[in-house]
Image (cartoon, rainbow, N blue to C red; front, side, top):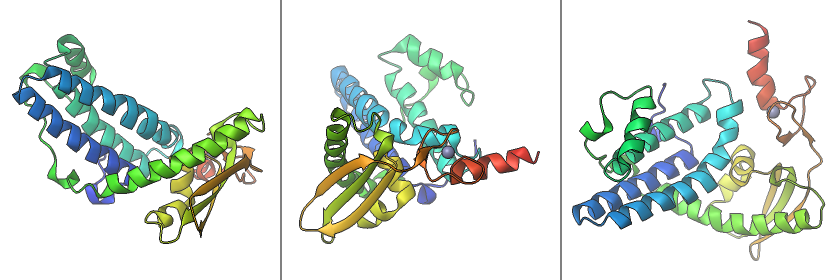
Length: 242
Ligand SMILES: [Zn+2]
């Protein structure tokens, strides 16, 4: 695997590694006090919410559809490599066989997981900077989601990624620039388009996108002459020349 340096990781990948940093710290402390339930709760919460409901959901498109060597795709591989390695080690005393089988199955590991030391919290991910931004984005996501679900209930469209969202955020919003970044915003909210502006208070409206579905990645995007979206065209074209 071709790792991406921590300073070059996109926000979501920095965030999941900051969360992992916190979970590793919590689990080490809980193990020292023989509080196994606390370990289980911390890992369970991390897997169900941070990883499954947010990180993997948003980044699976780049894993499936970006070019093999795209920085975003390699960033996710970097993060998931570290997440897997830390979780297998943290779970080894509790889920002895499962952790060992997972460790054996991974291509980059050697020996038994039970011969490994616990992971150490990584100081590179101790700042909490990405976490502060993502926490604010998750607050905004709740408004976006409510607006989308209203339209889905009204049968205007059926899936999140068909939504074109008009968002108003308060003046001097800390994550304004991130919201203006179309690639980031459509990935984070899993939507077709985001039109953001500053106003008196946070509010969101959703409507069905005017874009057609890209047949390769199934996202609703402006399609080029090749019949696929710009990202997919840039991935497929070099392949067709081979
Ligand atoms: Zn596409």
